[in-house]
Image (cartoon, rainbow, N blue to C red):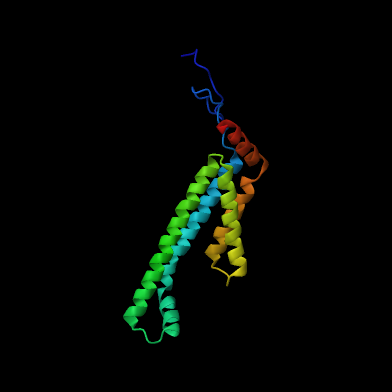
Length: 165
């Protein structure tokens, strides 16, 4: 067994297919990954907290549609909440996929996450404001974007491009 080649712990051994070894994931990418995960989890929590605002939705619907019965208003609020949570879960799953691809060194994922974060921040700035959770989620995403563009992250993504060529 002593004849086997030894590799530093922070690198991956070369594959037997002749490909160069994949570079180790730098701390900056790891921080970016976990920041995007945190942003996603916070977003899901915020979506689930919408169920606590059902009465507000019913009241708003009653003001715009005074002729509807209480049952119809409750049903409309339930449907709106379920649709909102389903959309939030789909977006969260895509966001997590992009974060995993970023961790794998994919530049396209970094660009997609940057655009989504910019849209998230723009929505908070131009909208009617948001909850403290939406601001916290946006902050985590901005931290993820910043860390994904630091020097070590850039080098990792550039090295990943070389490995795939």
